[in-house]
Each structure stands twice: as C-alpha cells, then as structure tokens.
Length: 346
Figure 1: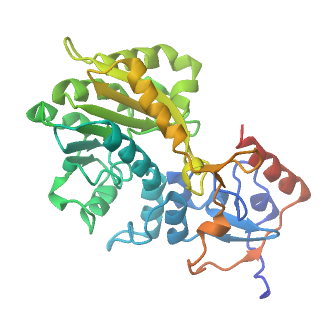
Figure 2: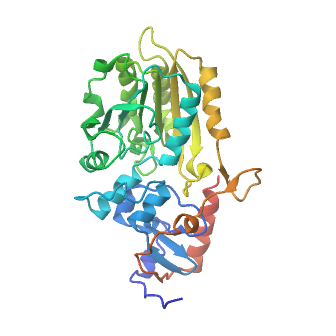
C-alpha cells in the first residue's frame, strides 16, 4: 500500500462529533444536500485512512449513472448538492413496476413536482411527462440535459404556480418529492410553519388535475414529529379527499433504500393514492413494495435476500480520484462511529 498523505485536519476536526465519515464495508448514511460543503459525511474511511468521495462515487451511492449530473456549467459542489436532494432511481423502478403491474392507466402521462434531477420519475418510462416542475435552476438545467425525456417538458418555477387545472382528467400519475427540510432533523422540524413546505399544497394540485394515481415521498420525520401530528392528519385527509366528489384510496409506508440494492440506509415515507379505490386496497398494493425487497440488514437473518450493498462493492470500477490520508481519529471517535452504525439499524 502506498504511503499515506499526512492529514491536514486538526484533532478537533478529525474527531468532530457533529459529523461522521462513511465506512467502506457498510452502506452509506443518507446522502444530503449539505455534503456539498464536504463535512465528514462526504468522506469515507477504511481502517485508519480517510479520503473525500468523488461526485461519481456519490452518484453511485444514490444509484445514478455517473454522467447523470455531469453537465457543463455546473460545479462539483452543485452536482453533489443536487444528488443529495434526489430520490434513488432503483426505488423509482420499484414503484414504477408496482404501478405498471397493478394499475391500468387510462392516461399514459405524468406530472412531477419538486422534480429535483428526476430520480422519482426516472423509472416511469411507460408514462409521457407533461411537466417536470423544479424551482432550483441547477437541477432544472440537469433535468433538461441528455435525459430520456423531452427538454421542453421541464418547467422551472414554483410548484404552487403551475396550471394543474389545464390538465384535469389528462394525468395518469402526479408524483414528487416536496422539500423535506420542514420535517427533517437538519431542517429543525418546523413543519407547516416552514416556508419551504410544499407538502401542504399537494391536495390542491391533486384537486385541480385529478390524477389517476399520486405518489409522493418525504422523510420519516413527517410521521415522527409529535408536534406536527395534527397537521399531518389533516394533510392526509385532504390528500385522500381533495375536494367534493373526488376520493382516493390512500396508504403510507416507510421504505429503506438499502433493502433494494442501494448502498445507502436512506429511509423515506411513501404516500400513495389511487382514484376510486379503497384504503384497504391501496394499503395492500403498497405492501407489495416491502415484498419486492431484494436485500437485507446483514446483522439479521433473512432467506432468499442479499446482504446490503457496501460502499466497497458500490465503488468497484470507479477510479479513485481523491488521495487517501491518515485519519487522526481517537479511540473514542472509533467507538462512537461503531455505535452510530449500529444505531442506523434501529
């Protein structure tokens, strides 16, 4: 092994308890937009050596092709940031196959709100996009560049300002990943009081375009924060009954991306509504997502499934562009990292 470069981190930075590096022989924790600032999460350790991860490696953690975000005119930091906001495409393919096998879409179309870089809709190649709505100019630029959909379907602007009523009765799927900051720990869980909350608008979009199916994803904090339970209960009621005479069977599930071959223990809430169906029917449909899991937590027994994909496996074939350095971590930090990995399982 080549001699390691000396770390430029101070002991205080190397042992900062606010962040944690990733571990080669385990899936990553949730990739976040904040990784663009290169805290320790955007680093990977292997024993007592550490290095930064490249954009291509972070794309692999999310399940994107390496060239998905490599668009001229975007910076490395911007590419990492948009990847941190994205839904892993392997999850999209699970959702897309589930709906294709169980829903007879009369309209082979979709509208995606808060589209990011198109991760959530990427698996729905059997539906034609009417619009992919995204406010962030960097993400919108990536959405328009060398993607398997027409560039002119990308609408740069606020989801709340789109004319959904124009497409009433013409939408097969309404989907999206409204900003999760209002419900996440890093966003201080302001919920409905957060100006970034677009979840609260989704019943309006549903009411105006009357899709056959809607599919939204968000962070588990949407369900877990006790202070927002009344808001969430009202939100779910409005999503299932967005207006007089319009009813959707509605169900919610929590999925872990690692269970579907994504090298990342990324947990997300999935909200599914199907027009004219019962809640029981949709709940049964959504339960099939869990049945489709291909991988499992290697610390627990499972039959017929593969262990979670590790970063070491995910990075095979990707050129290492960042040098390994000494990691001046204390024994206390090493122990803390081990505990945090175990806590990811709970």
